[in-house]
Length: 365
Image 1 (tube, helix red, strand yellow):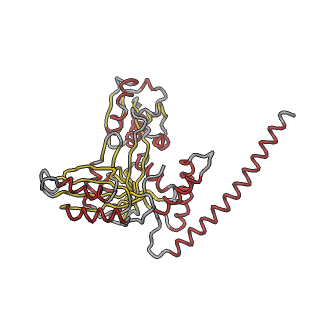
Image 2 (tube, rainbow, N blue to C red; image 1 turned 120 degrees about the vertical axis):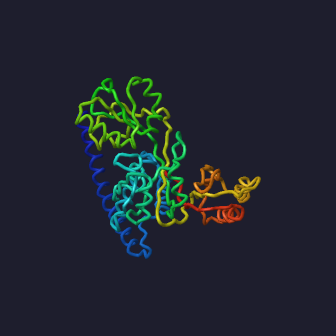
């Protein structure tokens, strides 16, 4: 009798799950139908609305009472929105390849599975692909919490016509991957230079005598680990992501080997058009100060005067003249917000150069 009672309870719960699944299926298809009708009513051809999607995800995360965590809720609804979008058009997203990079992970997080991939060989190529209309959007890394800014991305933003329309943050969790099953057999490790640096202490502690070699990307390292083991039977490994292990059929010998567990990379979403305000936004600017005393202070004074909070200030050589610098600034708010617009207008007066790189929703979980 005691065994029969849990069995009956299991059956009741499973019947309830089946009934709920049927309701979810009906509701998801109703949502998709409305999304398709909205697509038919649009007259600008823009399928992806990051500000609208950010508003939806924030609202659902705030409404969530569990037991699912907010991150799981946003992941589920990102997938639903992605597949609804695909009924209008499958978006193409350009990112730094090969498959298995954190750039691909950022593309998956932002756009879901309902999109086409344009795998690029360099950050420059991502910019060129979107500028040429060969991809709808691009994903590029812009900074890492440990290693700082990605200089090439900043330099390309200075000259590109593209706008920033979104940002994605990806926690960086490195794994040691190999076709070998025994970590003690490893004699050679491939990875990107930054990843080798980010796992420096772990490598010194666990594999101090193993040769380390920097390659163009972590995904390429995983690909090499697979190919070299297959062709030469050498004992090699790669530092890369779990997805890279899946793509290249490698064993995960160790997980979360990064020295800093809070290590995070920020990516930008690039497009040919700007986006409207979502209510919780960020604006990116690049500017240059006039060659006179106190010019940099004067450049930033309008932000304080109009109550605009600055979240980032980064200087870079301008590439135009020797010893000339430009400043990359992130501020809270959308460029259409009155206080932000007023601050930017005042900056234009005292700056020798000012370019608005874009306003976009703050990154979600």
